[in-house]
Image (tube, rainbow, N blue to C red):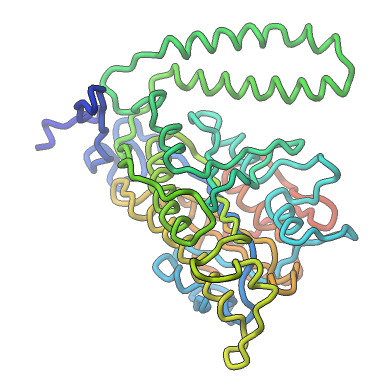
Length: 441
């Protein structure tokens, strides 16, 4: 049957009177022998960076392995990751440094985790995902995609100066944004640039041409603001350029089914359902070459279980330690729920096949949290997880415990693995120039 298939084959039909196309997934005949590159060009499938940011940490004694190195045993609160153990690197013993600054609980830790520093006033450094996106994401339609699992637009993705890349709380809205009318099927037999896109691009070009004249007429503060503004415009132009360019065929690309979402909210059932949908959409977006950076914010603070009086955050402060178990039983339930939710996301990437492998094979996924132990708001022994090799850019399957070192060592390592030309990351005591060589391939 292969003689009836080619790399541009698309299934076509109509839905409610509108023409639709459904691309075929990557088939073995379209890829090289191991599924890591396009057979016709030899171009490797691009690496993908992902971040999963989640509050409230873990429970002391229930997550950290006793053994350092390979072949470590996952603790009770990490058991959901057992199917992906070979793809996991676990870090313990590391710290967030305050340098005499006051700690904003559930905030300062994530500032250091994502930006390598604590902001001064309204100014902040860019987050690790934007630094990576500026290198790997410039040729994809979306430089990055952000989602939130609790129904909010909160996000830890930030550009320099504090500009936030807001999260999308609705899977339906994300689907429309990625696979709606402006989606260019990379496997479409005939590519036709959208004239509306061409018109928008010409308007932006006129704005760009006026830049130097405007910059000469304003003071330094306004020049800084305008520089940020024009930088944003340049990024829009780059995106429009991509929309005008014929996409590279990607045979793993197929449209996800349109499911009905649960109403975005803080309830466990809604979080669970919408994580399933977000995972499916993001996996398809990666496989279809729409983005190489994805960010998921699991805002655990206000996640609530139906029928329970207190949410996850309140339980960390108010639930007494069970005298028999030695830990907060209900908090542990939520920690298990959070890790299962994370594992389900990983599982969707692993299930999406690309040749002999999967989308997960080229993903580098960073899991970070705000405190080591939420009940005491500790800033040491911070758990960090890295899942996937990024297409062989890092080694996996290790537990490392560089006790007392800044957590930024992990962020620096991943940036270098993803090709960011950086030798030092972080500020003050969180600054480091020491990547974790043990995991670099």
